[in-house]
Image (cartoon, rainbow, N blue to C red):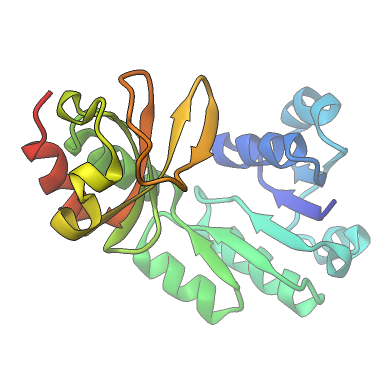
Length: 218
């Protein structure tokens, strides 16, 4: 179990806190809106009303004891900057701050943020790539060039094996597993045939996957 501090309970902060809790972490949330705190309190480990622009509030939280502190304030960039700086001054070991623009991220890093996330931009990017790839169910970016994709098995692949299709040599893409009925199974046997009920889990360059899916018959 890891300990997490989430400051700011907008849509991103609230959903982050709930998911962190669901994953078994100890989560303290802080927001100055008492109605928001009252709503989320039963769903997280601890919830506290407070304005984290006040150094005494942050100090009372014992921020150095959290594995990760998230600053999820994007509508008031000055507050986000000051809270991030205060967290580092008070000894927070790892601070993740939310940003909407590159210039904001630049300043957040300069004053001490260990990592900056762009939820809206990342979601838009993910949606754009996912829906550009034919019959994609999911997509996880690994870098600017590479990603993991979950795809429907092309009809022309049904009944064929990795050995038959020679996917890696022909398309520079690796099939790392399949998903069926929610269960993921690694592919360890190149002679195992694909079925129409499965989803493919592919790892490769985005352009390679786009070419592969656009050229596969259905």
